[in-house]
Image (tube, rainbow, N blue to C red; front, top):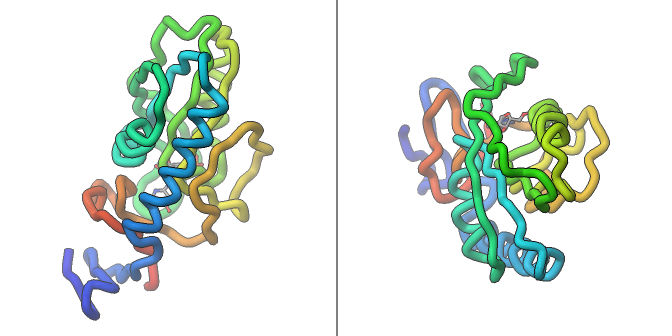
Length: 184
Ligand code: IMP
């Protein structure tokens, strides 16, 4: 990873990315989401289901931005190879068996076509939860193929590949504190 133009751009392999959302903007929005979720889920003892790997950083900040008594579980899915969707959703680490009658909040890094999240919701429904909602840091509305209900969205973004703050390009760049958008 190479920094260019005063850290406003980085290069990974032959791809150039430009800074798109800085850490302060991300932090401020997550604080708002945390407050909103804390009000909506007061006295509901929610279970956060965190989708690995991409949501690890968002989840850590979001959960600390809430003032709730809550639990969390991790699941791991993969549907991407490089910068375009393979269209296949694989569940690697399964859902816990303790979802019955729980208020579940799925925590995702980004919703693109929505296939990943819809597959999670279908799997979750089989466990008879009391409710299911989604908290996603990013949403690409132009790519979405489904109607999503009860969704907490950090930022709506255009249809361009982004990296950083948990989001990767073939496993790289997850550790960046800011979010970068592909330029070329
Ligand atoms: P979907 O199933 O098309 O909604 O894709 C969701 C998953 O694809 C996310 O959890 C990410 O892992 C990955 N993904 C989608 N768009 C991007 C992106 O712009 N950057 C990095 N990963 C992405």
